[in-house]
Amino acid sequence: MNILEYLKSISRESIARRYFLMNSFDGSLTIFGIILALQLAGSGNPKVILISCLGAAIALAVSGVWSAYAAEKAERLREMKTLERHILRDLDDTRIERQLNSIVLKVTLVNGLSPFIAVLVIISPYIASQLGLLSADSAFTLSLIFVATILFSLGVIAGSISEDDKLGNGVKMLSAGVVVAVITILLEAVRVI
Image (cartoon, rainbow, N blue to C red; front, side, top):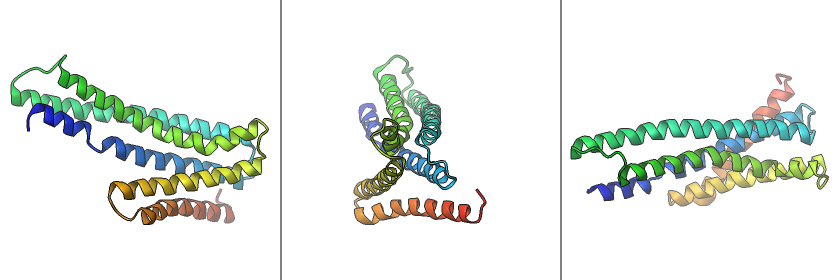
């Protein structure tokens, strides 16, 4: 495999796709847990939910960007140094270095933005509620529908990637939301939270 083929294989690798799936999933479940816990605690106030969820969304995005940048930069730098040792040439300021840096940037953005975008979709009913377009109860119901839709869709995407049962994978991802709901409701029922 020559250097250009190697770079093409790196740029097509599935890291960004995995980050998208994992972090959209993590963001969705995190925000679902926050919304449900606040609702059960009697704090279904859309403003409280928005502030709590936006704070978590920002933290997820910043964490995603920082962690992916550090991890991907380290991996790509290691790959470049390994390649330099094999070809006995410095690759600084070359097309290869620029392509590796481009991959780092793309993966970093996917890692940070995917949970943030998922969260924005889920809390959009609460934004509408703050604008007087929806009641707080309607915002809660619509957010639950959005969480379920996102989780199921992520499962379908995973099934499509693996060329596996899309519907079954959708149900598996959706079941994680059910687990979060059951545990949160049980904790509230026994007054742990």
